[in-house]
Image (cartoon, rainbow, N blue to C red):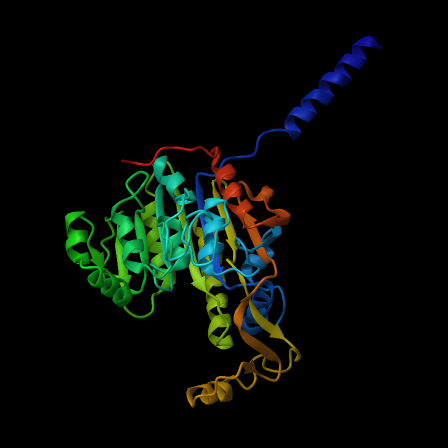
Length: 381
């Protein structure tokens, strides 16, 4: 009887040990950011793309949470404060790029906040930032720069060449060539000369980026092929045996509902492709939004076009109509909103995505997935 009890006890200990086995670490993290892609917008994209709810690829991911997006001192965030919270784990004021709440926007720099990209750089991983909006704008900027005002494009972009940790962000692909170059010129500097001095030419197309250049900058005029940019970036970043961090943003603002929802459908298809390209045993995929948007489906059904009347609305807008979007089945007021946004995940570390959480928790989830501790490391001199 005594021997049997010992055996049962040992068995229970072994089972408990197996159940408390530490989770696998992520070698890579890819953060997918749908700018203004709130829950209602996700639903609208599924209905527009597939004429049915919950058909987006990301809506099949097993880990789900709802994230608060409020910034310091307000209920409704902009992209600067929203993305700062996601990539640094700290909230700040609207308009501020990865600086603390001791910042006074446009007046005084605050404490620089260490971003998840900077943690990755410090540890020798490769890093990348991609967007289909101005690459020096708030969402991508919060990953690699620090500024007391999101409009400081020159100061923001030039920080690529003066990193605080490691050798700085490796791959930067996005639009905004004219505003970026113009802002640097207005600041009395020559961006091409600075790029040449640092051995990092700024290509004007994704196609022009050499396949062998693993520290490539491409700032283009006009629209970017986000699909081609993402696949090229992943090929480059994957060459680092230590791993990588990559942020990919797609604009999902629905002030033009057809454009915003269509972009989100395309973004979701890209995410599905990337899910097949990477090793999910060692890559955390994380999808969220920096804030929600005032998009609402008011009526309609599967036998009627979701965006019925959008062509007429667009014509009226071109003629000078500034009224909010009022289609038969869809209403849009052109503004950010305060409700929670969805967080979806798969891969190592995704088990931490659950319940209601603040947007600052996403930084902690990524840090934990890598197996890193939050530490006050010293920046590169």
